[in-house]
Length: 258
Image (tube, rainbow, N blue to C red; front, side):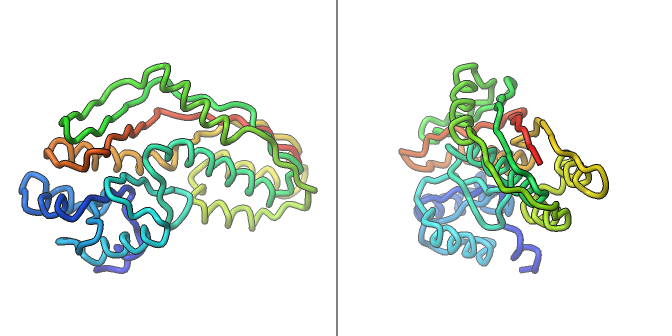
């Protein structure tokens, strides 16, 4: 196994009981489920038949976090090195994580206040319903009711304001923190750091940023994993019926004062 494969964790993980895992590895149609390091099927207690070291590392990580639970679909947090979230709560959790990471960047840049204003869920979305016992794999538009529910959950997690005493901007620290949190690809955050650098620094910034940009690939891996399981007729358990939603975008509006 290479150093790279040791370093990179899969974007999505499905934990199945050992009997189901054996069924998968013995079925030629389902072999793709266990041969993909981006979307990994993990046996609950047994050893993996392929990519043994990689899967064992994921098992150990999930044991430490209390997430090694049968019939669980987990999505990797794009802002943390070794953290997963249950698929049913990942959308709101990741958007909230980015909001708080942005607030930390602003704090390092000397902010006195970060205030949440609004969250908007894009109307064009794909939804996948994983119900392996019924053999359903549905791709379609996210309806207005579901979109409203996501907005409510997001606002509950994001509502409020953060107040700081203020300080001189630590632009190097802010850039290093953004890099650790996988935010170096967000142009708005890079621009914010630049505008707090040198003479005439910005004192007020109202911005709308994407809450899904960094997590999109991880959700796509989860969709791929679930769809492959269903198309192969793999039974992931009677209680495994979860909706994984990928959004065209979640826009989060904030106000920052320095």
